[in-house]
Image (spheres, rainbow, N blue to C red):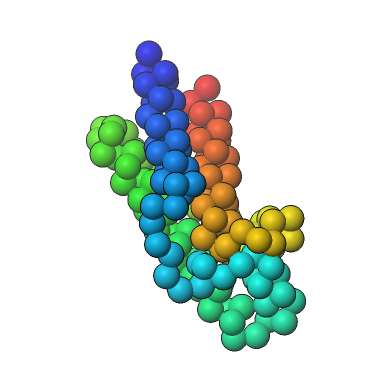
Length: 135
């Protein structure tokens, strides 16, 4: 029963975040509104704009991780939410490479959308790892 309710809460957090992102009901400031095509081009150049984009991505992903952990803790205060830290076991190089690959396939998306998709990918991965650790 506990595993079912934990899964339901995690799913509700995922669905809620995705629905907000897909609805366009929030505004992106900064380089999050840059296109994926621009990011791929800047990644090749490694100029100042690229590093500003990377900085924006790092802040966004870190904030998403913090918000994710807070939402789990709010719903299950007795659970050690840190085991769902989706940045655990990752590094900036791996995250950037994932985004470059995603952006090559989706050049018309913006970095905000790409970063949201990366967050979801990391949440799914961490939920699987956390689920495997319980068994």
